[in-house]
Length: 88
Image 1 (tube, one colour):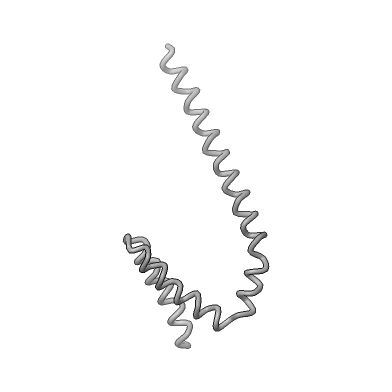
Image 2 (image 1 turned 120 degrees about the vertical axis):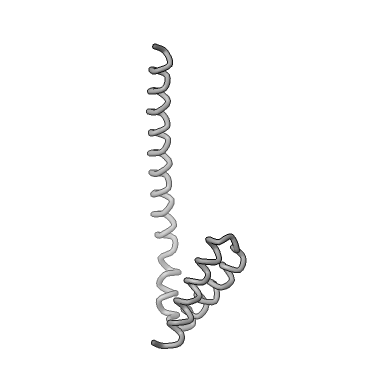
C-alpha cells in the first residue's frame, strides 16, 4: 500500500477515535493531517469538491429542515396524545 494512503486513512481513523473519546482538539488536528495529505495527493478532486460545496451545503440544509419538521411533528402528535389521556 502506498505510504500516503496509509497516512490518510490512519490519520482519519486516529482522528475519529480521538474525537469520540473526548480529545476533540487532538482529533481534529490529526484528521487535519490526513486532509492536508489528501489535498496534496489529489488537488483536482479537492478543487471539484470545493466548487460543488455550495450545492452540498444547500442539500444538507434542506435535509436538516426536513428532519427538524419531522421531529416537531412527532412532538406535536405525542403532545396531543398525552392531553387526551390526561383529560379522561
